[in-house]
Image (cartoon, rainbow, N blue to C red; front, side):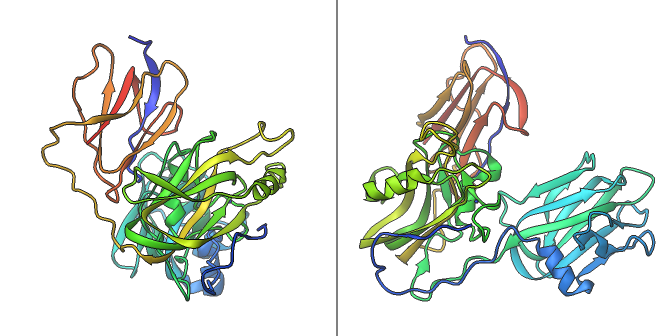
Length: 435
């Protein structure tokens, strides 16, 4: 038996200056796509600046700590509530957006217990984040893996930590409208299940490449997928049904692929390569070496001379960008994409998958195994649902002991020795089995 290792094990159901576009042939037909709203914009500050009445509250401590002070982008002003445990503050964003994260900067009078909520009408609320043991400071709540869409965002207090109420220097809401449709085609990938192998962590899940959001500068850390720091990594999308694919738009963060394959599949197992950059294009991408602070992303438009057919599309990385000389072996990160857009016809608005069986018995095949004798940062992906086995020493269980719940019908699971969060446990073996 290998030595017992203390680790964090999590099971997650999950499924960044703009360079010149990289066009590889004339597009099949002219197209016009409107610019998408920047997801690195504080939508709450914008809304309150345009209409101060957009912020409402259950009550303020005094006239010197008004509700609007949490949205004025001034680090020296603050909003303070009355002293009630159930005090709240909410902002009307002016229109329905897809919220990617909410950021609170607490003054010394912080919330010990509170809930961040979202609503489409200001009456019916859905929880985004629940805090039971708050310690103040700066708190960033990512909405992932929820699809958090609404017009109103609220911080509802449950218990304040001090003798005072709830005091905020800032209350920021980030997000954006889904990318608009092309005038001549449809983004078949928008809001569809996305998946990838060995991604960095839940905050950079594959789910973000199809959420319609990207920062305007292709630089900031908003709504992106990133792999771990290895070469042979991929991210893909299920279009829901057989499709005819005309072109693909890849909106990269600075950590773009120098060399990659664009592949399609009918069954998510057998893949056909429909595009790879030319030697000259690879050389141009490889030569663009800049430090991480100076590097920016790029937008690749890949036009297929002959439309491809398939249900699944993926980007398979073959060489990562370098951020200093000598290239390419030093100072490399993984691959990082804001958006993976697939344009064409067909597809399905809903990708259907087999339901989780009530009786999880039967035959399974092993798809992942780690004995944790060395360092481990592992993500794995699969088609339907999986079994996760955690062994705490002794003989490894002969069968499964937990069935994951599908998310988007295409779950992903992760076992991460170093990630923050999750269930701390002493684990000797992890095996994943799939039907």
